[in-house]
View 1: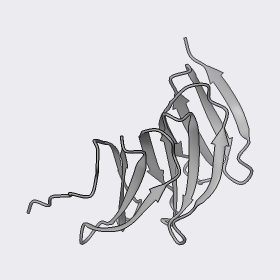
View 2: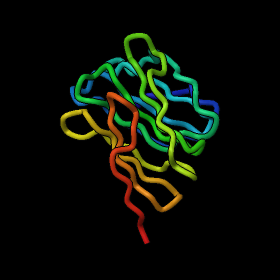
View 3: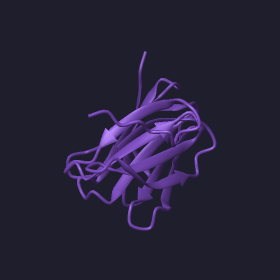
View 4: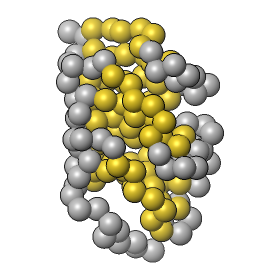
Length: 134
């Protein structure tokens, strides 16, 4: 079976299935995140709050929470119940190229073109640990 998605207005840069495969998220050069029903491959919602391309998306184990990393230097936490941005994590000095939830969903790790990776507390949005790469 082949599905064609005509929803994006620019290149898709990242994809992630939710842990139980209910949803599929795509991040795009058009600054948006699209949420699809993973069974029907039907568009559910478009999340918009980033001001630059979205490089990375990851689902929490809860299925109703998503994080995203963007070239706008930020990480955002999203509700898939209200389809709204819940929190904005700020601290990187260049584009965020990768985000991932910890296995207990209490932290998010992010990597950036600023040569740092950071570990963030999901409940407060604070940077817990910062590492500089070479």
